[in-house]
Length: 336
Ligand SMILES: NC(=O)c1ccc[n+]([C@@H]2O[C@H](COP(=O)([O-])OP(=O)(O)OC[C@H]3O[C@@H](n4cnc5c(N)ncnc54)[C@H](O)[C@@H]3O)[C@@H](O)[C@H]2O)c1
Image (cartoon, rainbow, N blue to C red; front, side, top):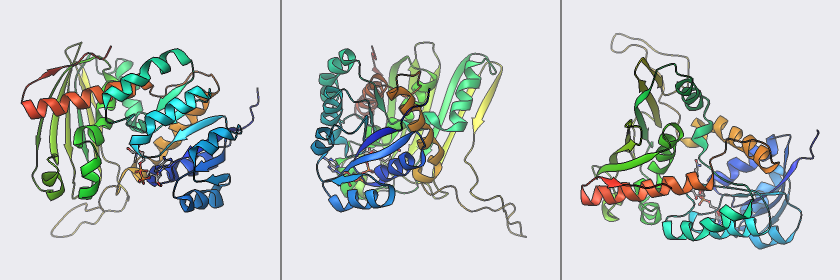
């Protein structure tokens, strides 16, 4: 059956809001109806580029009665209230990660999400990366036997400004949370978390008692172990790799080359430019697929979007990693 395009209310037009605005405009099954940002010039720029009505108030979007779904791309501290508002209005919502930095606020919202029956998806876009999702499908298909170890390498190109670090919630809740969700994409039942963090180079991390370098190991109920290697910088560009190791083989995701041209000389062979600068470029395809899956979810069709529970689980693991790095002990987690 043909559907009318889903009318989106977009809340927040910063870095990731602009990606979603472009994605909605490019998708034939979606239309940008309303755009809210207190910095109304940002909303107006998005409206001029992609259509829709700009406002400085998210409340006006809800009051319009002219949207079918909400996409939350505003700062993390606004997510819980906006998810609750969307659910109360009966509007399916795709909310950027993390749900919040405070598990208490997430848990206070949990009963409403469980009982409301309104679809809520969390923006763990990496699940939609073609390479990661193909490895996951091939592991599930038995190509490497039983999964025994998963290794995730995730390094940002350069450390964020100190002012960002100050309010980020720390490397585990801000950055590694994507990797914790990737771990659960393969091994949902994590039971124990151990983490080590150090500050090796970033004065901002040192000033705000955060880490710029971390390794986290997660133990799953099956006994499989996940190792996650994070750094806030990487001289070679955005470093996003994964290895799944099983009883009969392994599957690897390498960094994608940004050019097929390489230079060989007397001093070096096969030299290529650095990897993608950052997430906007590396995960461009994933953001578009995430949106398509959300449109299905909003229409009541089967969808693989990460759920509110997935968002909560990643934060529980992040909190445990923070506690483990501080106490230097393994921390048990119960994701039920
Ligand atoms: N999935 C990903 O790959 C990814 C990448 C980047 C950011 N994020 C998440 O997306 C969220 C936004 O991050 P960003 O980097 O785009 O931030 P940003 O600072 O670039 O943009 C945030 C925008 O929201 C606006 N805003 C502030 N309060 C608002 C409110 N109450 N209602 C509506 N708009 C409001 C700001 O004016 C700004 O334009 C964060 O939660 C972040 O963790 C996810």
